[in-house]
Amino acid sequence: MRSFADRVRHALCFEILGVLLITPLAALVLHHPLDQIGMVAAGSALIAMLWTGVYNWLFDLALHRLRGSTQKGWGARVLHAVLFEAGLLIVLAPFIAWVLGVSLWQAVLLDIGFALFYMVYAFAFNWAWDRLFPLPEWAEDQAIKGKA
Image 1 (cartoon, helix red, strand yellow):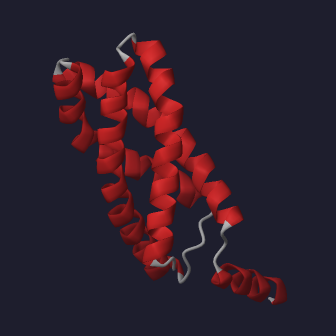
Image 2 (image 1 turned 120 degrees about the vertical axis):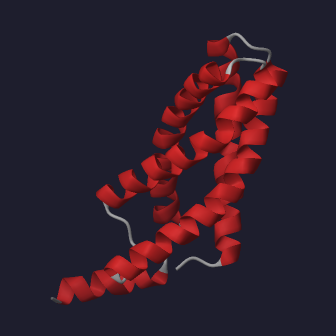
């Protein structure tokens, strides 16, 4: 499993790149001032970083318990992304409504748009991260599977 330091590095890289991508895009699409969208993006990123650490740790524990490994196939990656965003949606909608001065329903719709972006982004980022920083146990798993 990944170390605490690796999880912190992952979360910081994920959120910084995500904010840099989503802020100008959302300001353009939503016709809200860049500073308001930036506040939503930065606040959401801070909340999401906390959620990321806890969620990924729990997901890896469950995956390790069920499969004996934390290596994720396509199905596990899709499930991981969907469950992550569903939990985050519940937490972020009130924050978005408050910052942008919109109704809770409008905030939910906006958050769904953010979640759709981040589901695709999370899938791509995590796939790339695992390729750039693979765990040693995965090579051992592959060697064992290759011998079987």
